[in-house]
Image (cartoon, rainbow, N blue to C red; front, side):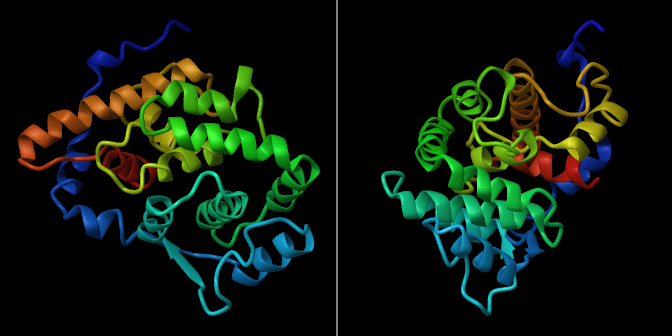
Length: 232
């Protein structure tokens, strides 16, 4: 199938209506229940840095919580890097823990490689989506086993600490389904996207965000559009 001409795609009216809501309400306050005991137990059992993932009384994480984590993140610290990863995975998984034990074990099997990939991804994400994506998906494979695009792009996204200008956005199968079925990106595919496709995705959301910023008179982030694409 020939690549879809993304310049012709228009943002659905329902998404434009959702963007009228305050950013903080839709983004910072987007909260997910997490399996706190599971994460603290599994990462401790693997003898990995970054534990505990949360305090024992914390049962939910918000985008705002992860924005705060990223804002103060020391990428030279193995402890902070892995704690950030665990918290992103906990938020992204919610109460569905499928494959997370394998992800934790993949880091435990080769922590130096995992940390190197994370460091490169987090340091380049604010400037270069292609290089950041390649750090976690080199040559179309997972740098960390079982950390595919749906979760690696969450890592890249949260690296922006909530800045509306951050160029990396989350791309998962639900976002992709909306882009195909509602927005008309026929050639996107359901998963396993190559770097070039991720870059096109980020550029499309940035175009829409720029257009809506002009219409609404405030800076719209690409993540505000991703939020709607995930759950229209």
